[in-house]
Length: 440
Image (cartoon, rainbow, N blue to C red; front, side):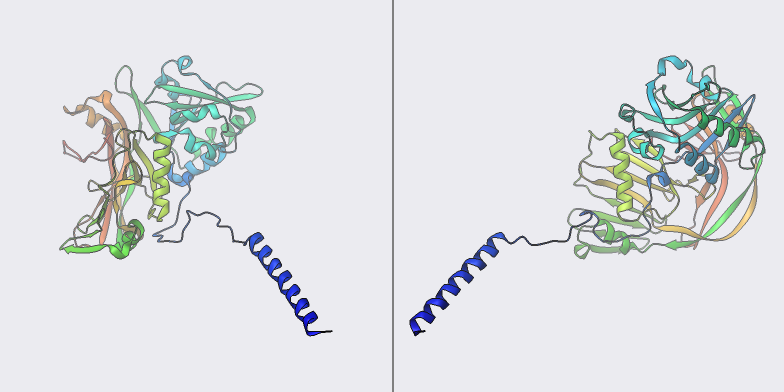
């Protein structure tokens, strides 16, 4: 073989290699690992995330049996009942608002189980908890669920979703066996269930009535050690670029800010306020989106540092409110915002975020406290000149949270509260006033 033949062969091989490599480059498709969720970027988590069913809960359940009324707010009982009805098959949704008549008469009738939420619930956000699939029902909102144990046919029973605020009622059919089992396992056992107490149905006016606890009750006052959450965790969770944030300290407070947002910490009240002035309020938000966004926002940085429940929503002001509850199911109030998570939303993000900077994990002592009956509290309120009874909405036991500046203890004192014209007030012996809580 001549030298020229060898060169020809080598040149041919190089040409074919060049063509092969070029083809591989043109047709190469790299393999990338799929991201499960691009939004779930690891970041600061102050506490655990929570599911919707842990945040949106009833705060009272009543059973109306003959002429007696039994009620509970115990969380273990509430959770048990919600788990039970979540197994039912809700179907054949229909609007029966014009068929019910007086809703006040309807919800308190004997043979009714009444599940009461502290605020109206958009069906879109609660549907998965109850397994509701009827798309026609997703535009409604409700604040009570009524189980009818009177009208049970061979095949069907009825469950009503009621909005007292809007005077609306919507009905679902469920299998009769679910209602009959509920009647036997829950409803008829109320008189012997230690979690239930007797309530009295009192008249406020010709159109309005209210349920109040019949007997006095022994409660406990508690002291907790203050477990502060480092402000740097909130800084790192709330600011886009924490490294650009500047800190200023002024005695009992400190501020963190960048070019557009501010995080202010008040160590006298142990509250933080996050403000983004660049956000404008979104006048187009609907209730389900607003509530879902608010839950997602707190879950995004693990901000549920206690037993918070959804208690308020204002679509006009784009405001959502969550409140601390004790482990038994009693709401906790404080006039400085120490027991609440308040969010005000703008068009594309949070506008204001107000909350505490501690958790209540270490109880150090407790003392007994005697509280009078709800019937007695109602008589006191009726006798006050500054109260019109027809505007009373609820009378309930709650805890007043107090703290002295510099003291490592937080005190929870049981007390009676009343909801009047959409505001919560504390009933204090000999006090003609009270404290204002909640959304206006």
